[in-house]
Image 1 (cartoon, helix red, strand yellow):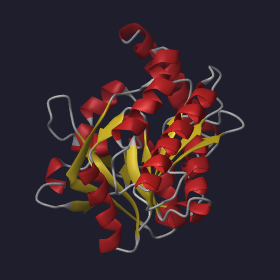
Image 2 (spheres, rainbow, N blue to C red):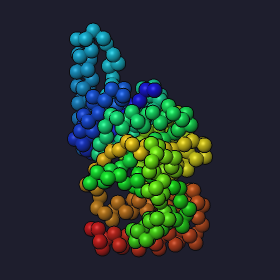
Image 3 (cartoon, rainbow, N blue to C red):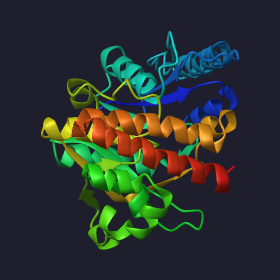
Image 4 (cartoon, helix red, strand yellow):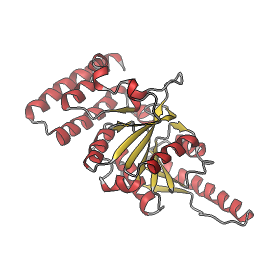
Length: 304
């Protein structure tokens, strides 16, 4: 199966270039697509020139070996506007599927670090079960231990999801809101509802068929909506427990927005999710606003 990698850039060409360099020697990835999400700092042009040079070097190497291969291993796609995480990655998957001819697409945040073995294990999941739509690896904590509950979680009810959005309630009801660690132990891959969005591999055809990410959401909660869509299409999602990666954190968004601003972005996506998938009316919307106000106050007091 042909694999493409999609890496989303916004005003951070250095980190994006580092992400491309980390996977440059991965033979399992045939095409690397950088999507520039309408950067305002000249990132797109810098990356375009750099990727063009990467392709030129590959062409020279192939000519020396007298075995010419695909010239455009590295591609840059420029979005017309910054529509957020979902919009940018939808554009990348569409390009990978329709232009590059990829069957599987690895969606990777620029600050996600992973091995080629990880890529191969994710790809094997699709070969073992042809109903697989998404496969993801396990997030590693700073001490190298697996963080299963951050890597995958069940689709929750409205009230459960609301509780999970509050730092205090999330800690109090942690066990009831997540899969137990025992769910993941002793298995190479585990069926789950939702996986973390910083690194996942998708079946491009199934992803496109379900509509991909919800572009009404700028950032945060996209994973839940994708899981809801895939459930409606009877597709499977797996966490591959013997594949792992590290994630740097909030990345670009944390450098451009403080904790309170990030929380407001998250809350806007949460409200959209509640309205769209739980059909909440005016009363529950009012409760959500009240609860989110308390969470925002907590964020300002303790995280700023």
